Length: 376
Image (cartoon, rainbow, N blue to C red; front, side, top):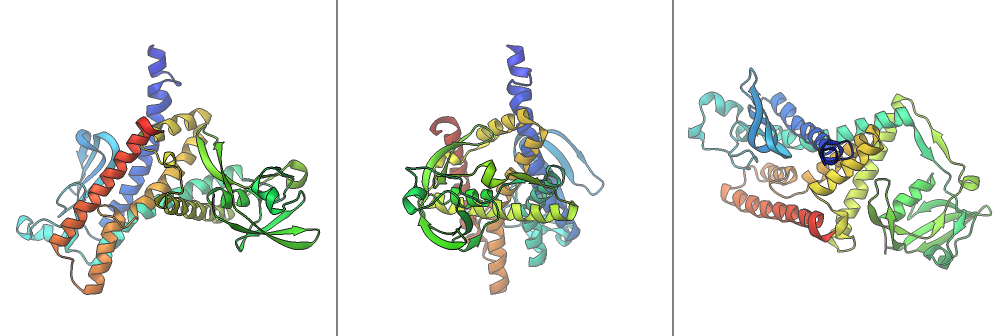
């Protein structure tokens, strides 16, 4: 019984520790972005917290910032001078509650560009973390690729119905050129039910075919069953000529930027399709699903766990840029309005949007918790 809880395959070391590692790294980097840029802009910081709720451990640095580890490890925050609460409400405290020195470094008294940079820094640092992880991975392991060739066409699949033939070579999809078979899989997988215009090379002639991918269940490397778009073609060793491409440091950075851009675009495509009701709701998970994935990744090796950090980091970065208060994107929208109209949005309007946005965020959190516990 004790081994099942404490062992490497048990709840503590097998799941909770990897989960806390992944989440802590992502949250720390996000909040450190806010902190570093805020300090660079001359904004005072009251607290830097990993987690919410009662403090488990903390200390004050020489600038007066309280660095703390809190009991609920589902996020974190940086509380600047002038913030109403730990969640950084968009309105500042009354001027009479701040000393003259505090007013100079209060967040809400700073120029718009300083506030905007500080808020945007959190998601930007998440993107930087993802790029850094992929740079290391490409430098160490290179990249496995295969030629974009059709070796087999499933008889009952959409590709067969459209006229695909073994030996066809993919040239472009909807005008987007492809270089590897993985490029084709990536493009098709997030477009189930959407017609795609394929340009193929067949016997030195270009052939144009239109195919609508169908939804199929597939098991990902971590054992999760996911629904993706497929057209019913396969690659093999003879035509695909699989190989590993090795990259130098500079090349690895370029590939990491491309990979991060691809994941960001795919995430945006998923969110768009999800809102339209064209994605499986079980694709969205909360802390329980993340913990399960972290445990599975840890069992496959530390490099898998680090890759999960990169994927979660870019996901957190994109979600925080959504134009919904109290997310970072919501604050940036109000700073943009302030820049256009030449004055801050009224506190009443800010408060109304903040409360509505907070309700949306809480509803989303409840939704993913429901998926984790009951629906999926």
